[in-house]
Length: 306
Image (cartoon, rainbow, N blue to C red; front, side, top):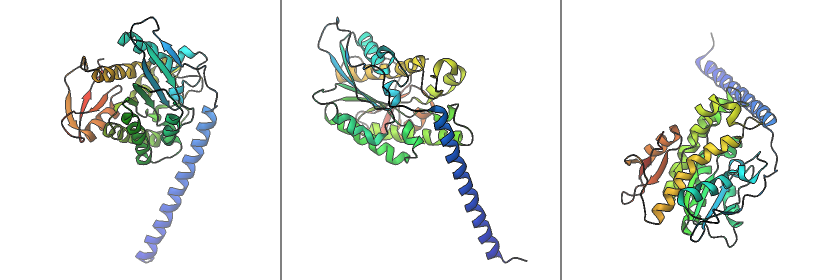
């Protein structure tokens, strides 16, 4: 009869082999998903420029940073990109001229955001929107490390006097080319990252908007419309849905900056920042902002009207 120590050692070896095999399987699935999705450095036509040029007043300067979702990967017209949609949407909502600059890069991770800010030059943004996180998940960057990079970039912009809105990491577990069990792993990692992003952004003085649901029920129900040809990046309609969540947050940030109308929504719910981050990760379009006068560990959840 085998000794207990021998049995324990055999069990440990078996567990190691199993974990090693699972890791190898996940890596293989990731490679298959990348091959199915494809990638290119090609960019759509530049969306940089003035929107609402016939409107009164000085232009509000808007900077767009992030990854392929911010670039508008797959679009062939400038006006189909998120940056252009943001410019058009804000011009309409704020009744003001909007000067847009996009410095987002296909394939970017949170660690690349500072380099994108360096490319701004003399442009001094009043508002900035950041869409980041997908590549941190697919490149196995730890959520803590990724969120820390994001928080530092947000803090840098806030120090310049910029109002910052961040669209947090989408739920990658709903992307069709990603097979099980990698899909479950991707879902868990992306939700974890979104929660950490929310905390980092709010602590740095920005506003976090949950994008998790944009690759959730809506994209699953209308995948032929919401996804592009690679079945990973959004289509023009998918980008429009993403922008429809970001524009109200940008407008609210600007109005608060100008000390005008407060957020026109349901009553504010004050809760701990960790609780707010968790709730936002489960509800698409939820905004999380630091609660003024309540300290850095308290936040307000602003729920989007359905």
